[in-house]
Image 1 (cartoon, one colour):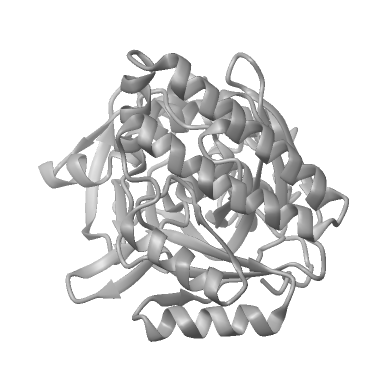
Image 2 (tube, helix red, strand yellow; image 1 turned 180 degrees about the vertical axis):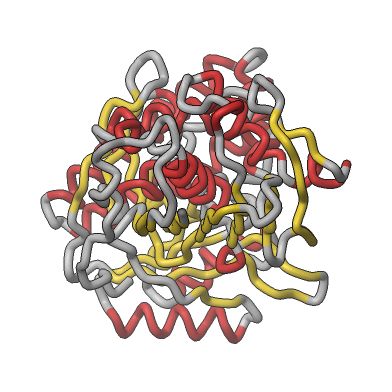
Length: 383
């Protein structure tokens, strides 16, 4: 038995922070993929390798609750997401540890990092979510529980619960939706914090998007912690700003779906201002110094700029309807010593296959010959 699955990363186009409070947001999947391979363990002992992230392989067996019992203490510190997924899938009834055939897993997220003088640095493209989608889906297929992958929205809601277990209950799941479904999505939570919709939208052909990397990663978790803490002391001010950001995002979503690029660019510019206000309300540098410098350079080239994601660092967006201006803005930031990031929209979402070479285990799905995660063949949008 061999299972190979992959899932794309993401970049948020509009709706950061306000998406956590039920407002709509836009996200696009990008062609940096987390790749997971499960194969039969040669010595019947579970093992995990994560190239470029931790040395390995790390070996383990499973407790009754699905928690790995590692033979190396470093693994528990470095592979916490693996622990959470296995434990949470056991709690959800997807796994029975005593019946799980041992596997050798390769978890490759190397495309989500950039080499620097200080070693590999995350670009901020949603590696954790892409790995959650691909690894959890691969595990479900490994034990023949393909039915859990359908319908897709039910699986997305289950993945959100798994990922929140790893994030101490936080996170919107917008990155999970991009990884599972691919393409560009309108995403929104309901009043209970569950997924309300994750609907495909088409990027207008005259919208040009370029990506720049600020040179350092952002700690999204600490920003969310800060937001939560400040909500307790400044709820009115922060709620007002989040509502403003939500209204801006809603206007931008409507503009995008109606191919009103000028109005979408106006919403993106207003969103950048709103993120700056939210940062001041919370006492955190969402619009950090490097983001401010990049926005100034973009404005000088006649291009709209905003951070993508939590801000502080990671990725920024150059947005325009003029390819010439986009090229000029990209060249301007390169001259300033800031790297552009070469990515394209990925329409495929979760993809891959399972190759069964042995007799199915006790939970094998009789429909396992089908490939519900088959890649969607489509040309990438030229971002």
